[in-house]
Length: 398
Image 1 (cartoon, rainbow, N blue to C red):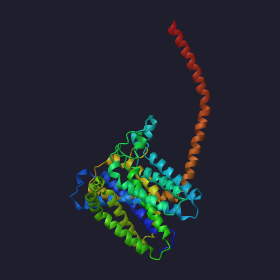
Image 2 (image 1 turned 90 degrees about the vertical axis):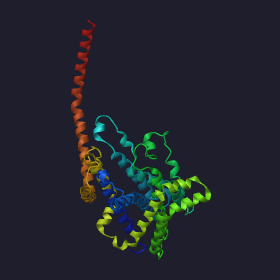
Image 3 (image 1 turned 30 degrees about the horizontal axis):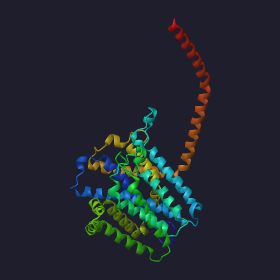
Image 4 (image 1 turned 135 degrees about the horizontal axis):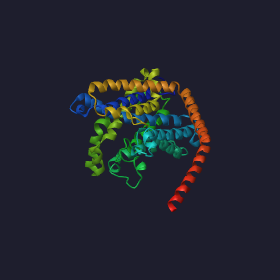
């Protein structure tokens, strides 16, 4: 791939890899019998480690792609059409995130379950997009270094102070808002610290955009990403404990005690280095289509596995009950099924949406017709009910 190509195929490949790893990770984690979760087993430990890489890569790549598209055009500020598209996309992801947690049977009974208000991947990515847009608009009339500096600053602040704010209960906020900041109520992801991966992705994309015509872009980018990744994975904990010894600041010791954010960021940089290194082999059309279909894949996997809308998902029937052989074969079939359904949907998306609009129109017309027909009947029943009520009252009085 030449350095001046506008589409970065390795990013699409990274996103495809991340969504496939998410599918198998959710399937195995949700259905594998706890008896087989043996941390003394090297195979299980390798799987567990790579499962932990998936979400940081996915958030970082999402921030990279959105920011890359946002700053690619010549327009600035509100004149940039990507701002409006981004706001729409962010709100769409928030809406879909809530819809996937909706239970139809609960609505019929007049209940909205507490799980509806829990925050997950789509909520965080949608809100991250809106935050990036806000930072972009703030920085659009300032020096060119302001936008990337703020993005990098957000990442560092969220990652460095995570040991402090993770102890906060956010009890003063309504649960629906508190769920964006704390896992206490059952949220899977929270905007803090996960926004930090999206903003570092945006920061990296700005560097790619500004040096896209540099002759040695990829050699420098690959080596830099590999070195940063290696340092963060193997030396960041040692660095924080040394900072604690030198300064006496308790925060550095707290970070070292649970240094998952910086280590996972190192994993992200290593993933970038690997995918950039093999970028010439990542132009397969199917892989690129998978990378461009992550939202559809996510929605389909959520419905099948967790039973969105009905509660009748695989998780309900096979929750933590399968052995390794069955769960591995099931995960492969699950990845294939979700991907196939998503690609099929995207291929016929326009046609499916047209049929959906027709169906909604038909339901609306039938509802109006039923209302028109039933209105005289309801009025007649109302009159009869009033007559019967008067008779009953007269009888009671007598």
